[in-house]
Length: 429
Image (spheres, helix red, strand yellow):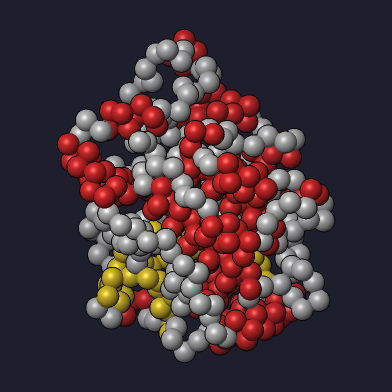
């Protein structure tokens, strides 16, 4: 009843989960259920939020310090010297995956291709995880839990899979992620893998302290971190870092398949590290990509099937970043679908709004593919041209253009555009 009588001019009920700018958190079922019966959500509040936030002396001081700080633009890191060899490793993995009879020991055999810098660990004796500490759980999902722990006297992130509901597909995704991180984790823009456990299935990875790009954009209210995220130079460096990581992946024949801010982690010095490679695919020698299924049958469908209490959460998640051609028969994830997802991500970083925020009501009741279906009909996220330069507007529009237009750039071209661009506007003057 309260939802039906609510209008845009009224304040949201206090029990509606919010992001830091006061906008409803549409990733929660509580907020979405409220708007199912209500008027559309209020317009973006980020500009008003910053106006109010600047009255906070600590934030105001942090912004002034940040603006006076010299920040060098990141440069393209030297490609990993063994890129050609690594490409061959992933080609072999692709072919063995395509020909494999599904047996767990076949998957485990693939771990033999790990570099010797990645070791098997004993989960019970080698790791220290204090589950009683409030900051121990770094994240949860349908896959399992990510803990903050200690291994060999260093702080690490431990991604432990749910053992009670583990499927063969989950095990293959685990092996795949372990291989990508193990082989490519030495790249400065890819999360590094230190070790893995097979009982239970767990990955021991570097701890990236600032959390995800999504967290920093939409939830973090730490004055210093927030001040940095309003700096266009920081935003550009983060986008360039993602680009450099994707260049290395694609050079090795690896498609990420799930590029979104939740899968980009940020270091203490605000450099980007790509994570979560469970949906990655490997290019074979004889084809452009080797996944035998479309993205819609892996990324979005699996997410929708796995999330029990929140079945439409993917409307504001993976589906919003999905290239529309992946809904069509015969199309599989490849380098150009990664580029499409990155275009959505670029716009989100510049606008500081989740994609399709204004269109949520159109998606109600249309299932987990709603955002991708809308994109298939030509809809794209709102772009406030005050927050984007003309050169970056053109880049974003090329990235999320229709595939048949042949306008999407490769990541090496995106890197050149970022390197030569005039910059990204600050969140406010």
